[in-house]
Length: 85
Image: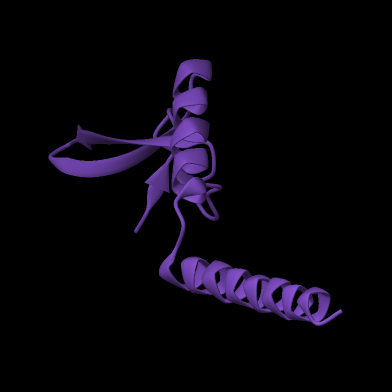
């Protein structure tokens, strides 16, 4: 897929980070033009990325449950030790 800058110059190795991809039709052909994000768009993107990162994955939940299970087992062992004294 080819990308272009605002002057419709083809970009050989475009950096897609922090960019808005806009479709522009020129001469009957669609061009994907990269534009820098505005400050507001950047903040919205950062918020969306943070929200996605905060969502636990299934593997993360399983790991947390395993850690919790190990912690409970240590507490139970310590309680049994204390009750035996």
